[in-house]
Length: 316
Image (cartoon, rainbow, N blue to C red; front, side, top):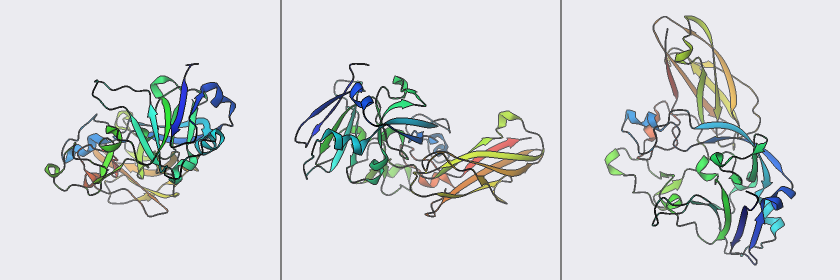
């Protein structure tokens, strides 16, 4: 990893090649942020029709501390002096195509995007060098964004007039501009840069951490705990919790998060009766964004951005 380099080029006056040692000498900042696969929760869409891809439940997410060089500061320090026609920043990763004709993995971001103001070129995860399994030794982290936008094994940053032509920018990891009512009207390969948008910032979401079915809780009063999060652009103002399938709701107590992009831990009181109980939770933020009661209303063939109201059946 000592020989790892990051190439900076494109519409710039001078290309740069930066080593890990160079990055380590620059001022470092920390970001605490949820890292979530855009397909997290995909299996829940199967209530309507099974979506393409790994059938995640809630396992594709974590809350992590990253440390690295702020992206804007890095570009300034490199003195790359981008041309006025540079509108996009494209990140390239080391991942190679499975087949010779396959597409390389790259993602593009509008240079003017405010989310890049908080982005870092990360060298550490939870205080340690980032392991290869999590995108090390260098990873682009954009707090509040889905994992596919946070380029693993970062090898290049290219300033461009247009976005990348990579399959993963043009077709993969995108949401239709108009959600299809009929699964047969929009297929997994129908995505284009004109009829869809990237899975970028996290849609608002909350999940229950306890009790879980395997906890085998008993009847009576119970403390319900979980987390909520969004893209960090607005405060999460409430989490409502139900232990009777949505007949009644209780406001949860939300603990202060480590950052706007981090998990917001919450707790609420509920009660369980003998037999079947349906626990539910729903988060809302200061912009009025909330979780749909029926998450399948946001069905699309690739099954991205599940954020339906959490439902958890507990049998006592």
